Length: 225
Image (cartoon, rainbow, N blue to C red):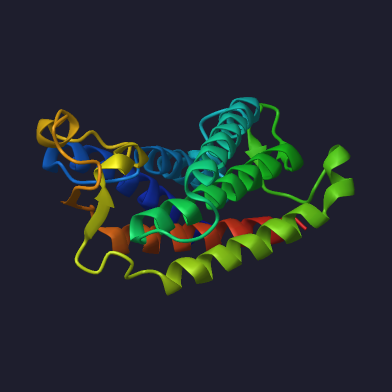
């Protein structure tokens, strides 16, 4: 089981690394910060069931996921201020779901690294909750429920980009972190209501990977109880 989980997470991490490269080469649309976070999480989670793949000390992983959690909290607040809690097209719905998902995922990773045992080399080992975090065992239960809920939600919206095309207004171009080509970014004469269309890179495969990571993270949290 550990070998399967570790191999799956490593494969997903490598997929997101390739996804970042492919998006630049093929000029396809992705949510860059989410893909970077998934790359890092995939590599980190591969080392949890398989310590041989855990190459970084726990203290460094804690710093990384603290930074991710803060970043996604800030981005989520900015997004809600601009777009609210409901409404919008498929792309707005994508961002509305993925910001809170990655807050939960980052906090879950932070909890696992903070609560797990540490080897003499400073690396994490999967075990029961230790130290002061033993008084907060309700947290992994909450994270597990939220991750499973997000997984179901992602499965329900797997066809959000039916033809892998996301349609947004030019006024919302800053939502997407993948650079635009010059025909969109430098068109000052175009109306702010002009609609343009650009391909999203493999949205169904991306969603499948997020579902797999959410479920795997939930399993790792349960194993720590």
